[in-house]
Image (cartoon, rainbow, N blue to C red; front, side):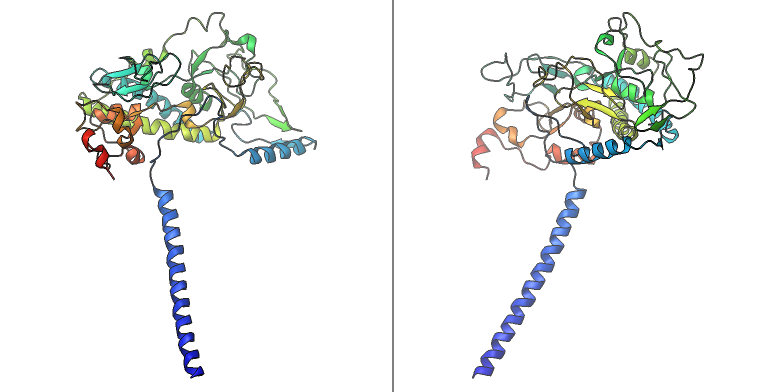
Length: 406
């Protein structure tokens, strides 16, 4: 009897073991597929608004920054010459010069398309908190939660403009990218231009109104100190030509002047929207390529941006604990959302274009960047990256059906 029971127990054990192995293999395959799907999936999470006391997320981890700092300090102790690569040595990255010209052209084209589409589709802006809504009528979602807002948190809508859809992020124009940073006393003398335009200028675009120094010979690093072996500036370049006594107060809208000479080919609204959507995608992808080589700095607590390897020394930060920093900015590496910030708005579906979005059903609504929402309502197709945020696959119930939703 004993051997027979032993055989039965052995068979059962083998079956259980095979079952376990099969389940483990399938589980590992599912994990791999799930991980692969997570890599390939589009953006589905809504952007989270940072608190006033919260710092922007680091692009590079803090431990990695500390390791790089220790390596640089150790390198400076050794007296030797280190060959720098463009653009660290002051020279341009030749393969990125056409990218800079394309980004500048897309910037002008995008502004033109937004201006033309905004003449047909209404843009609303809250006069208290600054929230933006695209299309008529404006939504009734009670998210106005700032100082001075109404007790019921409803928005105070007024007609918006292109600047609410494409907010202008400015940066100090730097004549010499490897020179010293702008001091606090020079804050009213150095021109401030759009950060995306300053990035294109440093990457190879030449504008007569914003001169910049172009080196013919590279700079070198000796014991951690950058040494420039050019004995003198070229005669046609003069340091300080970009500094004006009243340059800060006599600003000219260069974007508007450039748009006068831009003519979009399609004459109908949908064609302009499609052209603008393509310009928006090319602008962000091209600027991301430029920022991989040309460093851009942003404050960790406020929207200030400075294009260049170092931030300026102007003490105009009024964010969290600015008193401890004497008004100076807490610089860190910037992202594309700092240079070209997307203003997220509630997505209005085609079936709901004549109805206002209500507060009770806000968890069923999607969101999109204001530029994408504006072009989408004009007839352009939304890129695949934003499809998950639209929540078009979620059925929005009626107000009387909300309690019946499982």
